[in-house]
Length: 348
Image (cartoon, rainbow, N blue to C red; front, side, top):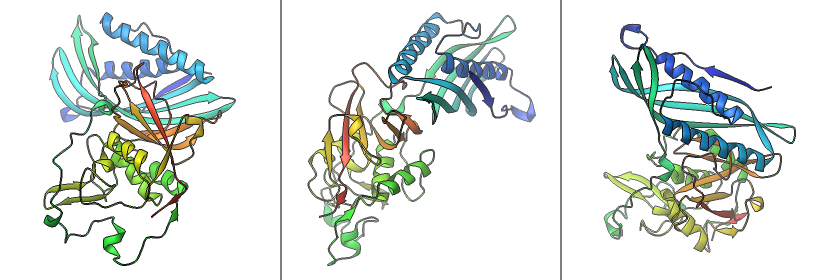
């Protein structure tokens, strides 16, 4: 049976007075849940803009085809809306940023799967003839926003005396690192622990997907390759003296996939052809435009009933999401992927 429900309490305005557009937000979230299950547009008069309705119908058609290809179907969508900020609260207009925490249940081969996701939207409400509607929906798509690479740190002497936070060779000089097993279960446990929040031991970026993946790999035993140069190695030190000290490969998707493609010692991986060849703790990179620049990273944290990978990610925080991301607003028909199997033995 198709079921959906609203989770959470209503936000109230100043002095406990409910904002007039709150009911429109309530209706929007309930309609969103219903559409996610039926994959059909609902003719709700809340949205009058034809362009918005057409885009919504296109996305729902894509979702319907996507579920059919996966031989699965959604059975329940639960969404909790959190008001992040009110940009405008006029008598006849309201502009708000909301965070949508979605919990989706779907069936495949008689098994129920659950995925979680946290997304942000900017909604513009308007009042006409005593009724509130929505005139604009802007989806935040941070997966498409690359980290801007800073200057190269070529002057190693300027910070050579400061020990890297995660570099074993400087913490324990003279004691060679031993090859170790990649602990896939630890990498996955870390990914599930921190998928929806930042570990305070590390910096958190606006575009945090690769920083999060690097932390997962490190939690699984991947050894730091400290070079002191941002454009080489794979390492993290945090902020030292107000400077960002971490390699590009630690925090930038394209740089990490390039590092994995060429590393021969320490953290190494094999490029494979298909997601079906991946194991827990392996990683996937996403090139949304097919131009050869990878903008997003995920880690395999589970498998569906058909054996296909489910992934975790940050930036748009996601847990046990289907690997191909065709339900993402970042996805295009030009999207390309790279699949990396992390080596079972890591070290020098």
